[in-house]
Structures are given as C-alpha cells and as structure tokens.
Amino acid sequence: MAAEWGSRVRVETARPLAFPDQRLAALVRPDGYLAWASVGELDENDLREAMTTWLGPAG
Image (cartoon, rainbow, N blue to C red):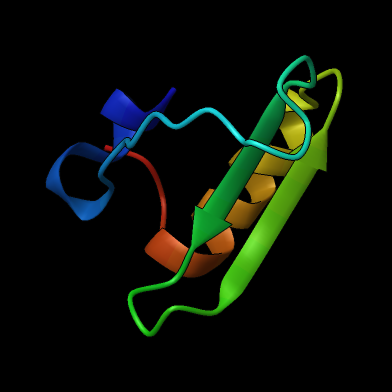
C-alpha cells in the first residue's frame, strides 16, 4: 500500500523486543509524532485513511 504514495512515504521494518510475536504497524510523522498505530490484524481502511490525512491522496 505504501507504494501508492511514492516518495512521500518510507517503509521501515523492525521487530519489537517487547512483543516479538505481535504484528505491529505505525505511521510516524516527519516530526516524530505517531499519527497512526495498529496491533494485531491490520485494518487497511484505517491505514489508508490515516495516510490520506497526513500525506494527501495516493498517486
């Protein structure tokens, strides 16, 4: 999904030490604030809405 926003988003992969078996996702603003987060099953609609809010429309 991140590719839809091109150079406006960068994907980083990390393994959380505190929850190694959990699926975690986060959208972090350039100023370091957390704009969106998910634990467990990823809700793509919520992520898409957050990315549109902070990055503008995809494309």
